[in-house]
Amino acid sequence: MNDHLLYLASTGIVAFTCLLVSGLLLSLKTLRESTIPKYRTACKYLALASALVGIGHIFILSSGTDERTIMELFYFPILLISASQALLFTFLLTLLFRGKNVTRRNILLHAMPTIALTVAYTIACLFREDIGNPPLLIRTLTCLVYLVQLGGYTHFFFRERAIYLGNLKQIPQSPERLELRWVTRAFLWALGIGIAAVSLCFFPNNYYNTAVNFVFALFYASVSIHYANYHYTYDQLYLRL
Image (tube, rainbow, N blue to C red):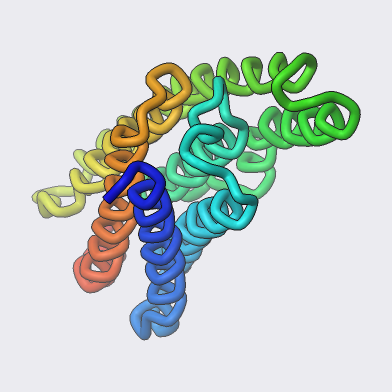
């Protein structure tokens, strides 16, 4: 398989897998019947995150982008997908620890820098070629903002996790499953994948891009399975929180 076919295959697999995961999550009987608002909301956020990745990769394919274009310095669609996933996964997983800080207002506030930069980039591309300034400057700024946001999201997640675990200690003989260790692992995996995705801007390589694509697909499938299977445990332990 040559480089171009490898690129098309890996991008197509990610798109198909993520859209499939999104559809399966929304059709889950446990999701529809769950009496836990936090669980239903988390599944919907995960379905949205998965759908956005799938749609993003379909857009990349339908736009005629080849493997050389996608390796351009700070390729904007990659940055946009990465930023949206970092935002959604941070609040998606924090939701299982402390749902009261996961509000539409809070999410929109954190999304504003990316939204503003996306609007600025779109307007700039109407007047100037993407390979020149100001689009290149906006792409660079978007990358820097994204890296800063990753640090902020990590601080936010572990702060909320620490508060949750502190409250958990007050419950006599609380089950170990309530520590939600898999949620922490999922966040660290999401953080690692986010860094790997943006690192494509600095280490352009089609095989590396293919590896990141497959990790994306496996990650979404794995987290979705955890959500589907964890429902029953969460349902049993919810009243003790």
